[in-house]
Image 1 (cartoon, rainbow, N blue to C red):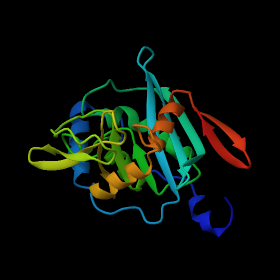
Image 2: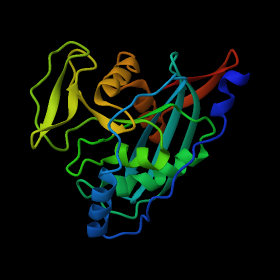
Image 3: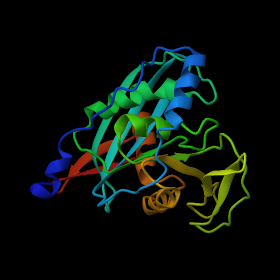
Image 4: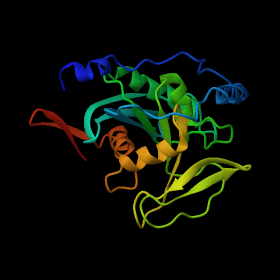
Length: 246
């Protein structure tokens, strides 16, 4: 990966300073309500060269966690960079406040990344959240990069079970508002729950999740991030490129 084509990507991921993480539950909810108005549900990535996936693995017994960011080159979806950050979790699990529990470690891992992705897929909710600012939206505001929430479970809203073919989906509706979709990514497995994170519309979000799938239920960026966070992703040099194996 050399030459001017990728020179603008070798600048690292910059993280904005929006608020403190040392807040009470009530303060966290107030912060979410304020941030929700700043989430952009429109747009899409321009020329996509790199896509990242983020996930976190929690050791509940010790109260610690490891966050992982995996950057993949598109369209090959070849992993080219993996960064991890480990530490203590300062907030217990509270439904609707997951981003306050997980974001500090995820952002710490993001700060280590040298390649700036054009799109970030997050194992968590975007606007499919009671206050419309889940983990993917929260991270998107900090990163100022288009983000998509691709969660394994539903947090709020209702939907009709989608068709069985990959690409079939049905809208998730909460209080009369469409907040995401239940998307079938593989026949015979449960759907994933896709929603806008930040700086991207719902239709482009659906498109890119499907575009990043490689025969698994989860799109490749978050699948590899899940493996990396759990210590189950290995990188090996092969013909001058970084390849991954699990």
